[in-house]
Length: 326
Figure 1 (spheres, rainbow, N blue to C red):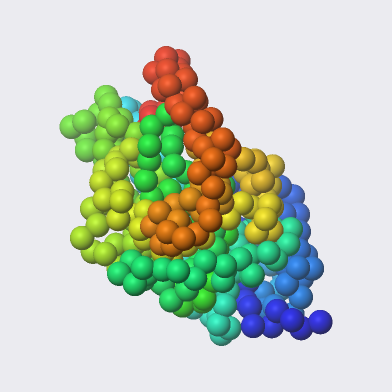
Figure 2: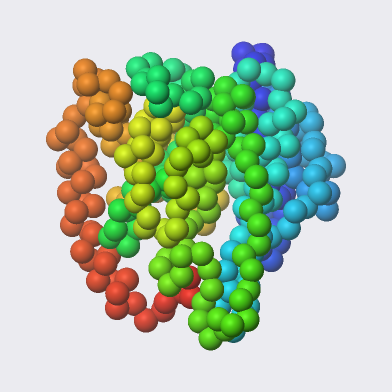
């Protein structure tokens, strides 16, 4: 069967555990097996680092990049750095997508796998778009998991899941061909308190940084986010989100992941597909039959009820992370 020969899957990331990132044994092999099962005939590109063991993996093409290493995002009060793998992710995705020759592509992390292929048909389901905010040629499907609207009882912006994406190859390149992040610099004069962009407020998340980088390519006037709860240009962001992406529930699009990430789990702070449809009606197609009652009863009521509890819990938490995270 060769029905998916016009799709390339870029599987990106490490293929074994490290001190910075723990992975379930055999998860990459599982990811590859599910791609073969649900996208038979598709081309699989593995984009990873030179020190990874890849010789026994059943992929069609392997890209081994130089490891850019962790990037420093903050320092604690003693001057010890906090790091994340943002640059590794950018390089893995970018270099993989550059080698794609098919019109459509899937971006999939090596600690996730497929449970179906519903995302292919879903990508064409919502045709109405506003030209002034349609920066991608077609919509890109992303997962609901970690596509967040709130944190700790407060509204947040530009927080899109980075586990999975499906769409036109050039659109994915436009989203992920972004500059690497520079290390945050330690100021010796500020030792004794945490140091990071936006301190002492909560630091922006990796997802918010990725999102801001790609949307600013199309709207340079978009303000950089200073903190996790920065709502500057939020309405513009919502118009970009609703005209360029489709947020789909992981179960329906066909995405699974390791237990730690628990892709199928629904959390009230995340944007479900029902909520996305409601915003689609507001921002794109006023005639779309989205149900206000459904989104209120399945999301908004729970979110409104949880918000004050989350704020209190955060306020009185005894285990505060130096960056404002728990």
